[in-house]
Amino acid sequence: MSIKKGSLFIGIIAVIIVIAYNYVNPSEIQSISTEDLANRLQGENGNDALYIDVREHDEYVAGHVEGMLNFPLSNLEESMKKIPKDIEVVIICQSGNRSMQAAELFQRNGYENIVNVEGGINSWQGKLVQK
Image (cartoon, rainbow, N blue to C red; front, top):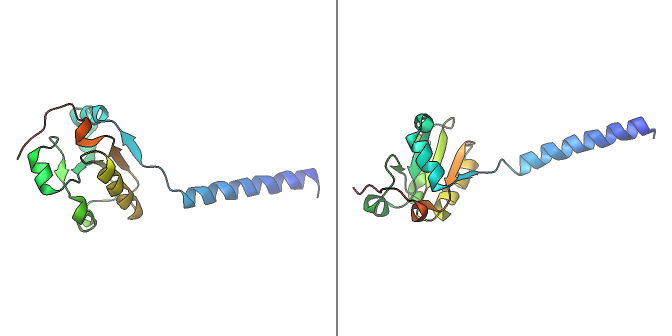
């Protein structure tokens, strides 16, 4: 095999590997800090996303970040049907564990613009709304 054909072959194999990797390993779920969340909620672009708290209802009413809607993880798959797939979804929970589970569930269901809030309510420095 000539050097030109060998180089072309290697290039084609490299492209196939990149495509296969992206297919097997979908895009990573973006993570932000609670400080980043506070900035987003106060900024002009805050309305471009859906902000959800996946804790159970009793946890949510005991104290939640203003602007977050309650979609408990326990019935999220059913609630998800109401959420458009073309919107950014920002997810929080108590510590970041359930929100990452929710983010992965969104991803498995075809959502691409998902953001997990690291540390959850435990890391939130702002005021919590009780209701």
